[in-house]
Length: 357
Image (cartoon, rainbow, N blue to C red; front, side, top):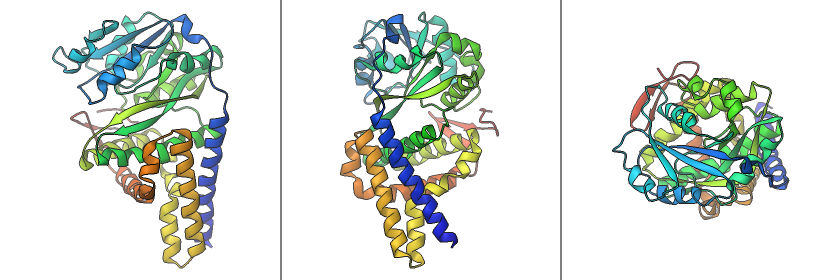
């Protein structure tokens, strides 16, 4: 009886994720003109990733009135040589003593920026020319306070491509399910678009500079103002590389960050492990349950990874999705304990609120 209930709940979640993906695909495309008011793009930069040049180039070819500010931690950062190839990019050296150096850099960039709308995204995010118009359009509605984006992963190693499956077949549908259920106080570093006035109301980036999950803290505080956080229909691209050990550390950092940010939600994640419960059902001889769970999981993963995010690896590595899900279960278990994470060569300790100590 207990196994039946668990399998039904796990299957229901996968069906609901399919519905969330369908709703997302059918939402009206953003085509407003908020970007014409002027946008400041703030991009913290640290080191030189393989796809960095292409990412910056995509930000120099955008429609609308905007400025691109890139903050580097030191004059010796290797990314500077690439940034200097683009005359329209403002490069600023941002020294900071903030526990979260990224948030400290963003605080510096925000003070130097000049437009009423601000867009923040990670250094390796690649976008299309109409990006600004579309991600800022929801801000024309005064009820909306922050806009974020889903993202697809392009990996340069097999380990990174395997990790990318977790983003497009697990993380993305979970974000859409949360939105469909009315949970909208979170956002992703792939894009954070908001009004300068609202940033000032929450105390600026300085107010979140002690937290590891700066993107979550920003969105949660904007949401606390009584404003909505929405997911744009824009899909951006990011690049990942690394070895298996680097992938493991990266995934565990994400897991522990989520756990300290939303502990209740983190503890509920196992109900989504359809592959795990399919194996348990098979072990008890419930083959019909096992087959149905595996089938609905593969449908949900394909719906999110291919039909929503258009990630080629979902089709190329389709047979590895169940193995990726089991890997994700191991990551969840590792994230359940401990408060240390590794981030850009630093080993950080987090308190119970997610602050860096």
